[in-house]
Amino acid sequence: MSVVLIGAPAAGKTRLGKRLAPRLGLELIDTDRLIVAEHGPIVEIFQRHGEPHFRAIERATVAEALTRDAVVSLGGGAVLDADTQRDLAGASVILLTVTAEAVKARIGNGKRPLVTSMEVWQSLVDKRTPLYTSLADFTIDTSTRPLDDIADDIARWVKENS
Image 1: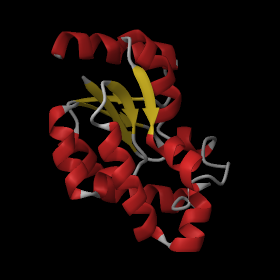
Image 2 (image 1 turned 90 degrees about the horizontal axis):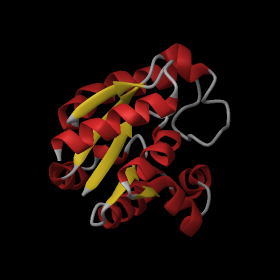
Image 3 (image 1 turned 180 degrees about the vertical axis):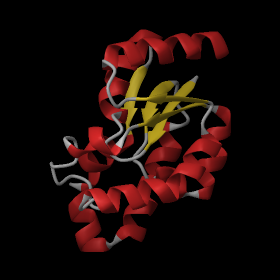
Image 4 (image 1 turned 90 degrees about the vertical axis):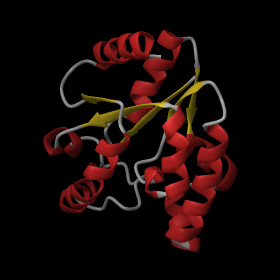
């Protein structure tokens, strides 16, 4: 069983995944962290090799992760790949949404190469939301509720629907 967390940058996919995986008895696979461990910081990959090179690395990492029984946290743009979209058909896909107000405090760490301002974040979210929504089996907002409560809600949904 794969439970896949998708959503905009700073929606809380990694932090929530850490809480959700134990509730489901699964390991957490964070594809961005795997990329960083093998290839170095994502910002540097973008700077040195460009976005297409990063997306190729990301696709390979995501394809491997989706073959495992795990909670898989995807980078915000991973779902842009058509092959990844097809691969998600066999998983429980959870869309994490978040308000711009909640994101303001989360994006200041410089680890998100495509998010240089709130305006850029909002534009990216506006473009991707239709795709995120079309892929999602369950949607939940991470803006204000405690992550443990959100993880409980997702775990309950997964157990009832898998």
